[in-house]
Length: 235
Ligand code: SF4
Image 1: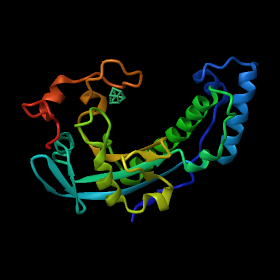
Image 2 (image 1 turned 135 degrees about the horizontal axis):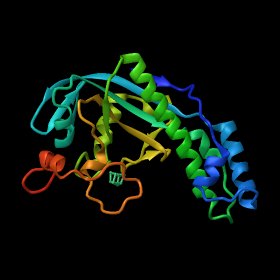
Image 3 (image 1 turned 60 degrees about the vertical axis):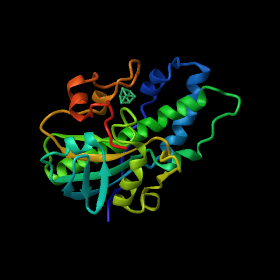
């Protein structure tokens, strides 16, 4: 049974949100944005859940964790020498979906997206702090199905992650669509694990232009997890 973290504080900083949304102070847009932020303050319930699990078996491209087999050459390589992982989901919370934007304002959906991102960031930070404190973790890294290039850890492996975690929708309100996307969309799922070297999914992503890139593409890391045909996961 996974542990649920539901009492997560979140600080919606109006000035930071105005800056992020490129809204001028004292403008009409600032008033409209603040109205959305006020609703978020009343409604937001970011959440996370996680499960501690142990690795049972390793194949060339697979790793079995608590009875669930994941297939990814990169995941297998990152879990070399690792015995314990933490499967997790963190979310902004479905409660924020109750906020309605004005139908004739094309900017408000983007503002709401930024507001939800703040709630998700709070859930992620709270979970990371909780795991570090509870399990006395040192350096950790995380992998997420569907992050980086499609073949690194295919998004379809969300189904295995959900099998490992159990009733994610019942516990924290995050459901998987048929194409394995999460709803609410401002949710993140993955496996966190101890590591001696820094790892970020962006290191295994060759996309040239991405405003969210957090680490440069690492050809050596890519070569380590690629087969001769350039694929990172077996068919
Ligand atoms: S570079 Fe961009 S698309 Fe690629 S993994 Fe990083 S954030 Fe995702």
